[in-house]
Structure formats: C-alpha cells, structure tokens
Image (tube, rainbow, N blue to C red):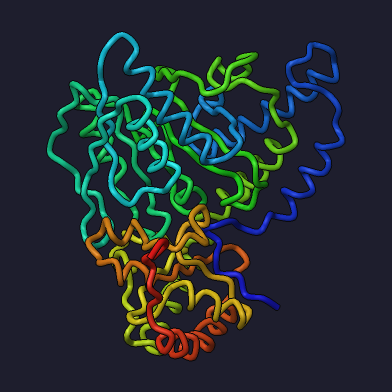
Length: 393
C-alpha cells in the first residue's frame, strides 16, 4: 500500500464530501433561475456558503466561490490592484519573498503588463516575515502574504502585519490556503480585506475555492458576464462542488484542534526520526517547539543529494513526497522559498517536503524513516546534476 506524505499538494477527499457531491449532482436547476427547481439549487448553494463562512469567521455575503485557490489569489491581487489604481496612481505591491507561485506569478504579471512596482519584503532564516514598525502606504495598492508558508510550514504573524498595513491605509490580502483546516481563521478578527482558501486542501473537491472579501472592499472582477456573486465573480455557480466543500469545511473545523494535536505528534516523530537516521539533514523553518510551525509540515534539505533524485527513489519505495509546491513540481529549479530565506542554490535544490494529513499514521512515518537512509545514500552517490543548459555549444 503506497504511503502518502504529500497532503500539502492535495488531500484525499472525505467520504462524506464525495457522498454529498454525488447526491447534489443529481439535483437539476441553475441557482440563478427563478423557478422552483432553480430556487432549490439556490437554497443548497446559499446553505453551503453559510457553512463555509462560519468556518472562516465571515459573513456569508463575504464568501465568493471560485474555481480554486489560484483564482481566488488572482482575483484578490489583480482586482485590488486595479481598484486602487482607478482614479489614482498606487503602483506598489508589497509582497514577501518565498510566496506561492499563484502570488509570485500574478504580481510579476502586473509588473510586466500594468507597470506595477513590486516591493519584495525580506524573510528571515526561518521563513518569517519581519513586521515593520510602519509602512509607507501612500503609493501602495496592497499587501499580500501567506498565512502559512506552503513549503517550509512557517506560521506568519497575520494580525500584526495587518495592523501595520491598516495604520498605513494599505489593503491586505492573505493567502490562507495552507493554513485552512490547521489554524483557527477568524476573518472578522484578523483585520484583513481579503482571504483565499481552497477546498481540496481540507478533503473537499478539486476545482472550488473561495475568496473571502470584506463588505467594504472593492475589487475589479477578472470574469464578466452575469455578476452572480456581488458583481465580483460571474458565471453559473457549481452547486454540487459548493455543497461538497461545505461538508469538508464543517468536518475539518470540527476536528481541527484534535487533529492538529495528533499531526503535531506525528510531525515531531518524523523530524526526530530523520535527525536520528540521516544526521546530515537540515530542518528548514522553525523548530516545532517554537509554536511557529504548522502541525502538518516537515521540510528538510539533504546536503549532497538532489531533491528530485530523493523523490524518485522514495517513490520507487512506495512513498509519495514532494520537493515543494505541486504547482512547480517537475520544474528543475531551486526552491525560491529557500533562496528567499538566505540558503544557497545548492541547498535549495536538495529539499524534500513531507506533509501529513487526516490519513497519516505512525506506520506511515516509520515507513519513511526505514526507506530514507538508503535513498539518501544512493542519491548522494549520484550527486547534484548540472542544471546549466549548453544549447548551441
């Protein structure tokens, strides 16, 4: 039986969410139609929105369903940037290094296409965002950052960062995709303007997420045609996916505290085991005892070995792990997160991320610890492959 240790990429769908999805797929009706079948679909959709909102400390009207976390992040960053530059010039986007590529690629697109001025905020060696005493906000369109770093698991000081931005009059978007289901999220108390989440990280279906957008915030929509959700996101809404998302969200929130404690125990067993069996390995991000590391994440670099080589060797042994974000998997580049943390390119190419979830067990951790030393020895013998291309030489 394969061992799955890549829950940060996606989680197994909950049986209850699958059942809810299947049942809802049998309901006919466009939720925008005014006949009784359409209104039945509308009721199911809005009840799902209420459930998701409750797990995020938001009002239902603030929850805008999207096709996933990436769309939610794009809608927040582009939409807030465009809105803030309507009638004024605020070209600056404040963003830390080491963000998910949904953010990095979006702000770089705005830089190329819209003349945005991207101010990259530094990370420390543990992947933490330093909280500035003040922000110069006159020309700033927004501040965007991860609540939890999706690669190394560092928990960021969301409220402190939001308070500084609010003092400077700068809107804040938080990418909470890696935090949802692991940390308490209270949109109303965080003091942010927008927050992105995704269903498939908490046992829901792939293909639906949400942007939580405060009542007082304005974004320019990415998609036009119907204005179904507050004129923010047009398109016929996926009732079945929303119903399934809501079931997964409700169960994840009910179980969150107990599950986080269980996963923290497994994570600590995994970290201690790797340090004992592969003493050369170096933990990335905060120590578990600091309270600044999400319970599900263990991230290491393995000196002298290629992360990709280790991944394939462990895959042959029946263990699924990753070198980083699944959105960048298979692309032979060093981890931009580790580079932003001050690690060199050699270290940044020797990384593996192990992420735990609802299906993870002590036996899974022990299977990894049994297979890792020989995989590391073999990968070390292969060494670090040359990445420089020599086309035309």
